[in-house]
Amino acid sequence: MDKIKLTTLMAAVAIMLSAAMPAQARRQAATNGKEVIYTGDIAKKVIGYNGTTPLNITIKNGKIEKIEALPNQEDPKYLSRATRKVFEQYEGLTIDEAIKLKPDVATGATYTSEALIKNIQMGLKQAKPAASKKSGTKKSGKKAAAKKRH
Image 1: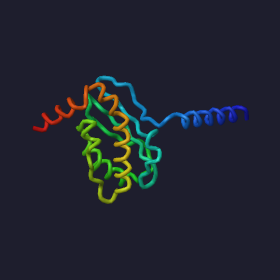
Image 2 (image 1 turned 180 degrees about the horizontal axis):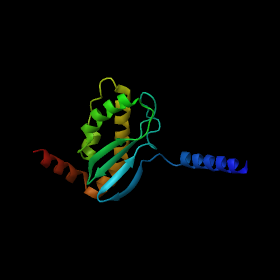
Image 3 (image 1 turned 120 degrees about the vertical axis):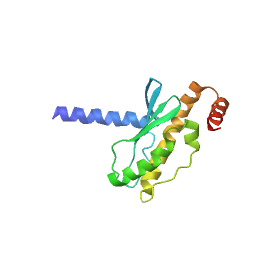
């Protein structure tokens, strides 16, 4: 009985501490030029069709390398449709390009698509300050992106 009370108390303290902390994207330490942004903490109120849709966004050398959906309550069929349509629009873009993107949603999976997009946008806005410091000023980043397009 004492073990159960102790476990319950520890869980309650952990919940209170996490609620008191400001909402920020959790970042995994950058290794080999990669950084992983977890959106589950900052996007707790972003709801798809059946609930939250946390993501891991992998950024490598200032560009989105990969986005992956983490365990959630969305219907797998609709989640698959939404992730295919939404994620492919973001992968390979710089953070600035991705923040400005107005992506299309997947037909038939609108709520899930919109939740994924909102998660991505929130995660990227958290990642942007760190990326801006690494790549220099905003102007130089825009010039480099413009040169690549031409």
